Length: 172
Figure 1 (cartoon, rainbow, N blue to C red):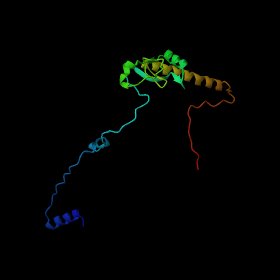
Figure 2 (cartoon, rainbow, N blue to C red):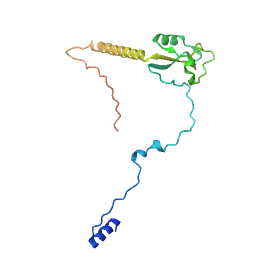
Figure 3 (tube, helix red, strand yellow):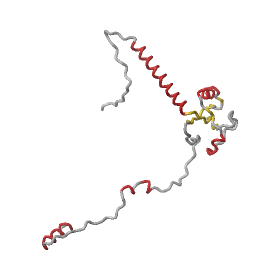
């Protein structure tokens, strides 16, 4: 017989109502049980990144620009990126990154590592570039659609082009 049934039987035999106080349990709140509380401090060694990311700055975006490939300089790419508005950052402004620049670098005062030059651009200019590229892509899609639909004949109309793609797997 369970303990609860025994108590009921005893209380019925004596005809005295037995009032039991609920047990008070000393339990920690559920919020205290989390992995963050139980985790040990991280003292594990991690390898450093070959191209560290600079600390974010308000109003600026950073990017590594290719200056050489397979040992030969890529002046065309650097010139193009500089014309787009990328500005090479000065090594003295980012000393916390602890980088040793390339020995035969054309950008001695800047951060160049392994043929890549760290540059920055204002966020507004990057947003303008994104809008330009989205507009150009939309014009290209419209051009393809116009080329496709010019063959359209009212007697036998072509289907409108679909912009969705689906992936299906075989049944079996």
